[in-house]
Amino acid sequence: VTTWDDSDLPVLHALATTDHHEIRDGYLILSENTGREKLGLDLSEEEVERAVLTLGDAEYVAGKVNPGFGFTYFHVTGRGMQALGQWPSFSDSSPATIAALLDRFADEAPTAEEGDNARRAASYVRTLEPAVVTSVLRTVMVEGAKAALRLGTGL
Amino acid sequence: VLGEWPDLDRVMSASAIRGLLLRLADAAPAAEQERLRKSGGLVASMGDAVRDTLSELASEAAKEGLE
Image 1: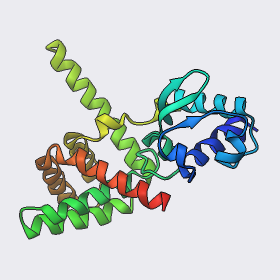
Image 2: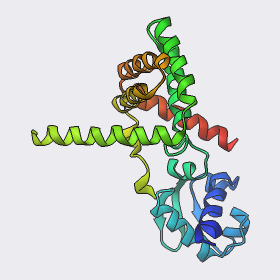
Image 3: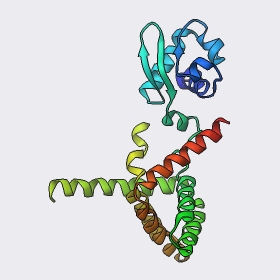
Image 4: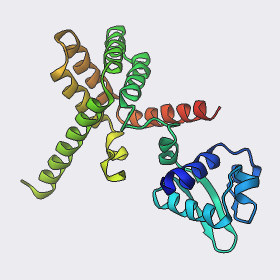
């Protein structure tokens, strides 16, 4: 049992899916009834606030803190959506994302042959394990960073 | 946990995606290698459109997830 399961995840999910007009408009006003009435959760004001601050530290939500009031310009971030599985994540779905990118560019390719190549490459990428693609991406990034460092230091 | 994730800003670039496809080509069956390499070239030629397109795809997926 963790605070993630008990409060942080439920709060994040509720914030992303609520129909409450205030939250949809970017206002998260904290009060005794925030958990139950606005989020549909049996959590106290303090528990909701603690969860929101934790989610903010992880950059899953963002907004302007207004002491004694709550948050304005409040929204669930892309990272938050990834944590909920509602956004592509390069850590677990990069083959699908890369394949979708190739399909999109296939439509814009200068020649039919290049477009066909990209579509076939997309089909192949979809068959790969996410962990394989993530691992290769990390390698590419590390090598890119090393190359940039060498350039910066003149080595 | 966040430190174990790829840096999305770096991933979302034409050169990184091209590098990924070239690396994948090295380990792919012979029939797939040339397609992957040529696709890497296509992606590289798209430049900044890579980042924009990935953002569009992510936005579309997010909308579908919320609907």
